[in-house]
Length: 188
Image (cartoon, rainbow, N blue to C red; front, side, top):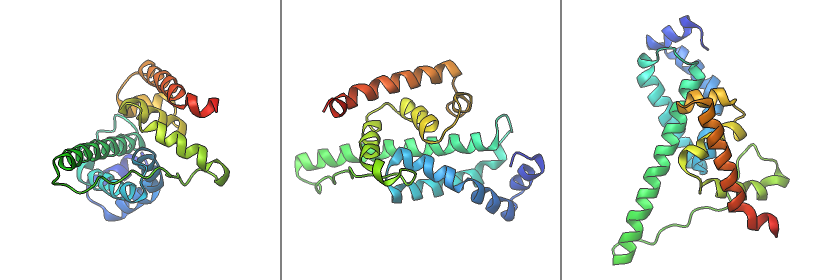
């Protein structure tokens, strides 16, 4: 996929090349987004937005990084933006409820299950994903890309536009935070 001729055909608007790109990266994008937003329908919407942005901005792809790294960066950014918008909407709804002009805020689904988790680990995974929601965005993104997507620290550093040491620090803080969040679960 990093072939210069393929990238050039994408830049020229070749629909067959774009279809090939979507076919190659759709699962990667969806799983990354799903790990962050934790709702299937929302992950589908965000994934579509990712590919729309890829299509619209492929002209700006300079080739400094691998094509997959560039797409991961867009996917993580879109997913985190979606989360920010959702939090803002929840706060607005909470204020509306407090003054009596809104509808009741929907409870977030606590039984989220990632498709890559086998059946006997679904309960543990749901608890972990709920804990991940409590991490700062950059820690959650690093942890998700490394642990859920299996990317290397170097790849994550390119995606998050930080140093490898920076990613190591994010992972260390994410692990510490998760230990603190989950300590009651594991001590029970």
